[in-house]
Image 1: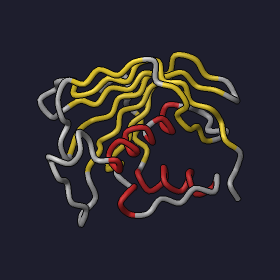
Image 2: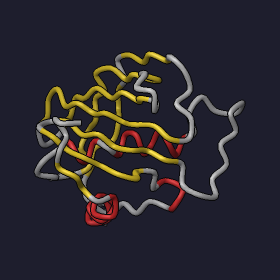
Image 3: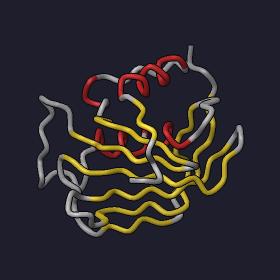
Image 4: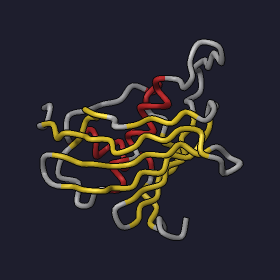
Amino acid sequence: MTRCAAEIPAAECYRTFEEFGVRFANAFCGIAKLWRGENEALGRIELPAGIELSEDRYQIHPALLDAAFQVLIGAIRPVEGLYLPTLLEGVKLHHRPGRRFWSHVRIRHHNTTQVEAALELIDDAGNIARRYVASSLRSISRLK
């Protein structure tokens, strides 16, 4: 975590999303804590209270996966827009991450229209649960 030493309050993260016209319902506000470094970010992801996690229904709850990708906002400075995933070149599934885990995002390439990043979901024991390789994300305009 020494590479991602600058903490960003989760509330600030979600205010930034709102500035770009995206307001997440409580179920999709899974970033509990967020730290940033140079072209990377580390987020603590937790399933919000009141949301059921059915172990047999999902490999990973959709709200948790969304929050894991939201961590990208901490890796991009300055934040000039929002990016939506459009391509995953590879996915490695090791095990289910559960209700709480870490999301580590590393930026490989970034410009105003596209981001290429790698995303790892890491359990509390430090094991990689999921790896999303060379994700391509495209910029979207403000939704306001």
